Amino acid sequence: MDSLPNPETKAGRDGLRALLAGPRGAVVGLDFDGTLAPIVADPEQARAHPGAVPALAALAPRVSSVAVITGRPAAVAVRNGGFAGVPGLEHLVVLGHYGAERWDAVTGTVSAPAPHPGVAAVRAGLPDLLERAGAARGTWIEEKGRAVAVHTRRAEDPQAAFEALRVPLANLATRHGLIVEPGRLVLELRPPGMDKGVALLDHVRATGAGCVLYAGDDLGDLPAFAAVEKLRSDGIPGLLVCSGSAEAPELSERADLVVDGPGGVVHLLSALAAAVGTSGG
Image (tube, rainbow, N blue to C red):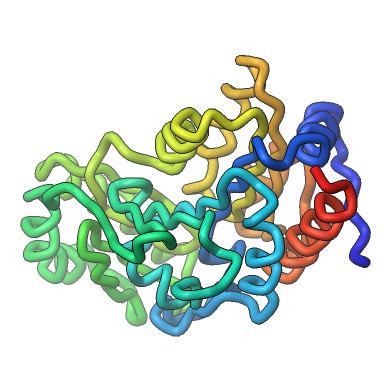
């Protein structure tokens, strides 16, 4: 049986104890890219770690809910994760576009509001802006339906290319009523009002959960970390997990537990499933 890692903080140890004592009242929230799936140069090629679905299928029936919270469209995360039609994942939801979309394993359908009109305007203006800004060779645009992302990971100097585009993209986003969400060598232009923290808080409150675990790897996961900290202040125990990356030290410094990438997350999920199964909680 996989052994459970020990959180470094008291709050994290309290959160883990609460989850083990009452798994039926727990929400397990998980980012996708970098947490359940390794980061790859082409996001379209990202797939869940081979052990992710088996670990989730073992854990999900024992907790209140497992929620994959991602900036990707929900349907893309479901496809790339291999979540559809898997026995044991009936308690899984995917909150795509930072919670603007919801896919529920029970129905297999996606629900979502109408897209923000600013996304189409930004999409049309991006190629010209990148040319005028002198974007580095290797910079490319990812179409995300309800958002648009600009990646610099393929540039010769990815970080310099990323920094050079921060202000021009922020100005473009503001003109069309959008915001810029920075990530690991990616700048995403998307509608305001939704982030992973809002999505996680709404889901925890809707389920009436008594404890929560959240695992992420990127700057976009900081609002979810803040949401768990807010829940703790309201008396709901929580565990913050960082899927370790030197590219986002802001996350690892706030985490109760740092694990070694998606493989470490899978190990943790498997160990949790075994532990709550043994306890019969």
